[in-house]
Length: 412
Image 1 (tube, helix red, strand yellow):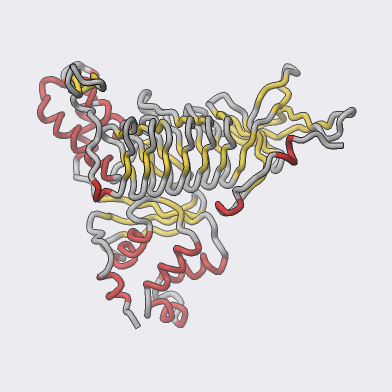
Image 2 (cartoon, rainbow, N blue to C red):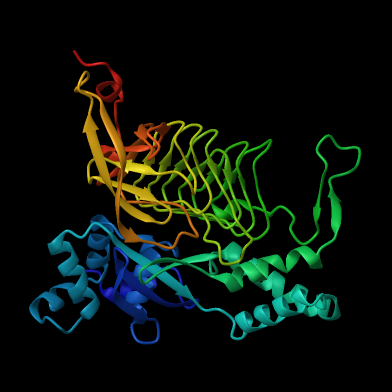
């Protein structure tokens, strides 16, 4: 039998990982520090491929197998191996929303330096320490490209903006000067800041950037197995998780999970300024159909599906007839529904009482598993308005297949 230590020896070094926090939904359930639990941190970080994301029941099974002799020992002596105890309990409860969030080792004092330079920028004094500021800026950009820093991070209660990381990105604009990329006689010639060129992508990265018109800007991240198909482009501060296919724009600072598909013509909006503004966030296994779009801080949970053409912005209400709710930027509302007397197959939706508050600085927050199709609701002014509608919920990508026929055909 292969031992736990033999399994660890086969894994990628995790000395750059400070720790991992496990969440069920938005509630933290376990903190693992590398100094205290180096084996658990190394094993889970490798399972996550050094990216935040869902830990599926299958992933948990792999982790428990690699704990080798410690797993039966934990079963025989509860309390001896707390990580294994938790994973066994999660398997028993069939937890579907377990997420691992990795904290990387970040150079001490980097955040303080960025904040200090940001104050100098406000006073138009950044040029006085240009070389030092460029060094700090490039350090932030390098860590973003490695995935060790993110402009928004999952934490207790949900996603939070890392405003100092955005401050670090913004240093690049006053520090840079406009330069031409490509010769003046070339068919493709561009002008941009010399601090924010296109990223160099190497074959060993496992990323495919397909010609002739796909690219990644400096300070953006893509995981192994990511494919950018023309005209795909990831802007500064964007994060695209492993094995995701992108066929269009991922805007600045947008966060996209693993195993997603951003179809042709689909748009993910970006935001750098204001610093406190939350970017668009997509969970794992999200599918955006052709011509769909999410902008202005909209958040899509894991396994969300947007049917082709569905757009969600800050001002878009999303109808949920299954849970009898309407999701808006400022919170959730009860859904009032009436049926047409002349056409019993037609339901009319209107906004009911507000039942929960949320930070309205970002857009609607869509629950995990929602499959969203185009829809119509009745506004407070008795007007018909387009509103995306949740047709069903799914628990795995295999359930994603959906036919609109039953919902769109006129019934006898």
